[in-house]
Length: 196
Image 1 (tube, rainbow, N blue to C red):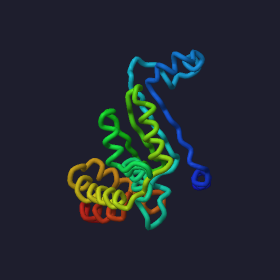
Image 2: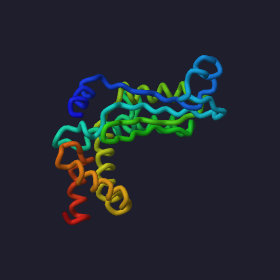
Image 3: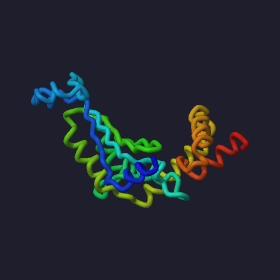
Image 4: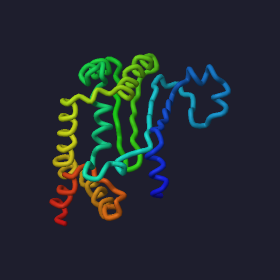
C-alpha cells in the first residue's frame, strides 16, 4: 500500500473529466453512444464536470496538515491570474453556475455544473482557475480564516455527525501516519469536545 502511494505521488496529476448530459456529443457520434455505458445521453441541457486528482489530505506534509484542502480552496475559490474571485463570481452569477472543490483522504475533486449554452465560456473560466491559479495573499488569508472558522464553530458546534466521524478516523488512523487532520486546530477542538 505504501509503495503504491509513493508511486501515485510521483506520477503527474491525472484528472478525469466526467461530463454528463451531453446529448449533442452523443447524437453526433453514434459509436460513442453504443460503446459507453457511463455517458448516457439525456434531454437535460446541463453539463456536469468532475475533475479528480489522485491525491488528497493523506499527502499533506507533516506539520502542514490542511495543505491539500487549502490548496484546493485556493484553486476553486481564489480566482486565476487574469481574474479575481470577485470577477469570476460576477461572470458565474448570470450563468447560474459555480465551481467547487472537495478534498478526501486520497482524492481531490473539482466539480461544477453549467448549461450547455454556457459551456464554452464556463470552460474558459475554470480552465484558467485550474491551469493558472491566482494564489493571491488576500484570498489565502480569507480561505484560511474560513477553514479555521469551520473547524472552530461549524464542525464542533453544528455538525456532531461529522465531528464524530473525524474522531473515529483519528482513533483508527492517527497512530499509523495514514491520516492527516484537516488542520492542527482540529486535534485541539476534538480534544476539547471529547476530553481526551
